Image (cartoon, rainbow, N blue to C red; front, side, top):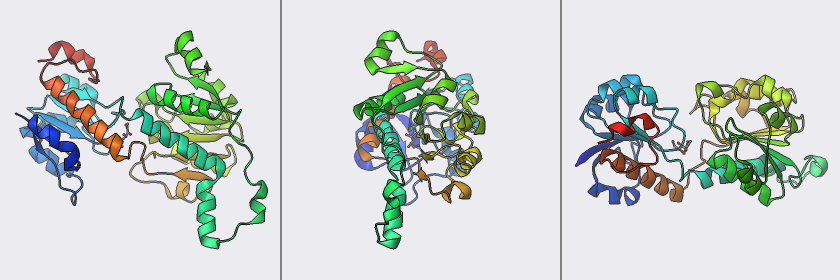
Length: 327
Ligand code: 8YV
């Protein structure tokens, strides 16, 4: 049986069916996660690893993983994994692109509503003051029906966000380096725009791009300055696609009206400056943080590992160049 190392705790109810397929090592619930030192010490004994976004699998770790044939990520984004180093060593990289789609789009939609309606700010003020202030009467400036959401990154999650926004009567514009076909655009009722067009024309800009070297700080002060002064920025993708200090500046200087972000440039930390701003909603990277989604993600990841290790068709292999070498 192949030996599988899981870096973070997973409930046994989710893991149980996989004990027939793998000999599994994982930390217990109190420990939550193995440390990097612990993983370095034991990784040489394992055939596969299952890790989370917060736990990097870089070249140095790959070099210690002599037996490893597959590393699976607990998520669609795999910027925590050095894919080139894995490919060089014949290690399959596997992600969970289908199971995170709906919960992550739900979260993006939720924080968009939260910031545009002022839900979090009002909730916190009301708890402190227990008084419904009359000056709140004209405090928010727009409702969303008829407004335009500009979606950056039109993959599964971006499209799922688009469907939700259409559901409340918003217009959808999108930018993606890979434009959809006219039929797909018509089905999603989405209009293509360049990056600049989306930034300058949308009332809410929602980011769903992967974090790649090209997308590093793609949302910087120059990008915020292209947005409408009344616009809201939503990020449920990855922190470093935006410059967090530039987001702070944009909010403080009124370049945009508000923001909602589930991700941060230097996770797990949130900058003091950002946390001090009222007109931003912040959540701790919880896009797929529901048991139902986590269960589906574990199944998608571990089925992918099993398939890759046994030469079965696996749709979620990221480094497809290795497919010819699949044994
Ligand atoms: C996290 C995610 O990976 O799918 C992704 O890319 O960001 C999330 O699902 C997960 O929450 C924990 O690492």
